[in-house]
Figure 1 (cartoon, rainbow, N blue to C red):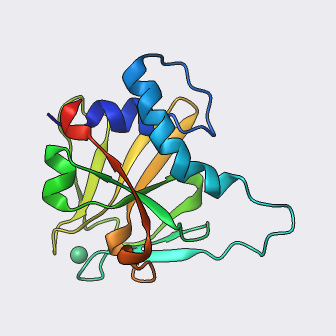
Figure 2: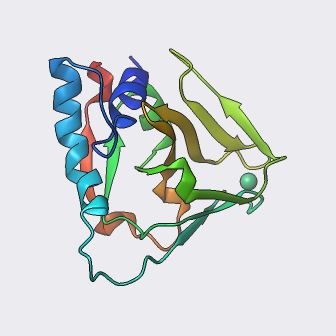
Length: 165
Ligand SMILES: [Zn+2]
């Protein structure tokens, strides 16, 4: 089974947003998500300035910038979709995401409840991000495999059993 429920109703209901949903599965997911979302929002007052990071598709047509520090943790999900694409994800409010190039090259893929728009490059096929909504606004799921400065092997990976949802 796909993890669309997870991505739309749990992932997008990040602790930074008010969360109207209930249910043991969702609560459990939020516990997992909380671990890797919270570090990004519990910034100490005297922290160094944010260092934006950039990502791209393989051919370079699609490029984007995230106005946040590169994460030290990420989510890996074993659902039918995430596993096939090898997605390693972090989630940011849409306001932190800027598409720098490639708007005319992006095409979409949706499945299950069609609440998530998976964006991929029509030239090279790379899915570098996805678009969705949280209860309080739009959000972007960033495929960290498309962010060169992030070393996937050094990330703390929070594994989500999306295949069971
Ligand atoms: Zn491309």
